Image (cartoon, rainbow, N blue to C red; front, side, top):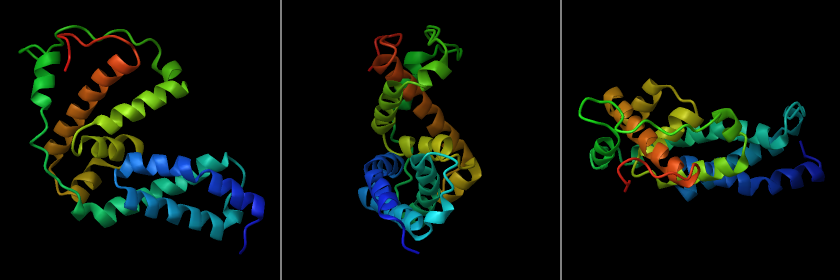
Amino acid sequence: MNAPQDYCRQIEALRPVLMKYARLQLRNDAWAEDAVSETLLAALEKPQAFGGQSQLKTWLIGILKHKLVDQIRKNSREVSTTAGSDDGEDLDELLFAADGHWRDSPHDWGNPEDALRQLDFMKVLEACVEKLPGQQGRLFMMREWLELESDEICKELSITPTNLWVMLHRARLRLRECLQLGWFGTAPAGGGT
């Protein structure tokens, strides 16, 4: 079925947004392009599937999420699964005392829901996720944004649940540090790295 020209133009105008989202998730331009192309093709082949109950962008991102999961599954063997080289131990020592308690209590970030509504916050968060080393960003995206189950992530990447949780923990610590500097304007305790 051919889609109306206006619908086609609207979809094509959203390509850059979809590419940005896909690149952030996959960190591979070719895979991101494949996922976005498949998303746009699906939307153009069945325009009647868009019922207008949400914004077109929201609907397309919903389709894209499924295409991203497919890309991750398809290409999981090509991704390095080394996890031991991250220097998260230094960050742990910086933030936590030997007894496991915070060296300095985290600063009050106010109402997180208000912050999430702000577009600028999302830009800083995206930049922080892009800076995560190695596989941390990818695992964080798979777990928190694509909402994949832990066992599915472990199976796809051939890692243990313990390894997954350690890498997610390190990713969250790094995101906390980055957000504290980039959004909340305060340096972490101990001067940071």
